[in-house]
Image (cartoon, rainbow, N blue to C red; front, top):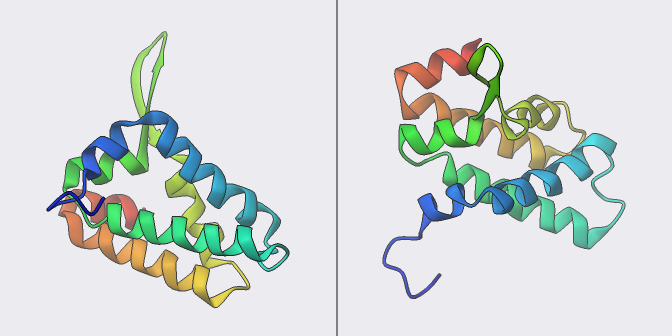
Length: 123
């Protein structure tokens, strides 16, 4: 990453497997709500949270790609909240102050991205 003057954020977000991997790290720890059980997993989860915080500071289109999953059904395309976005309430309910802090940063970055995203967060 040091070779880039600006990190390749869009490339990371377009990489579906990378996004899924980051979400999985957060999901595994937060679903159990026992972040201190394994120190390595705990710190990996914190770092993953900071990655999301920084990604959610990007453009409106970038934020939308992180908080929405497009689903194609027989009735057409629909947009639903992504697992990453649905994890924010779990982080807010966490017993760990660091996870709560990260969730608040994520919400703050989303609220500041655009008026449209602010309405999504408020809903």
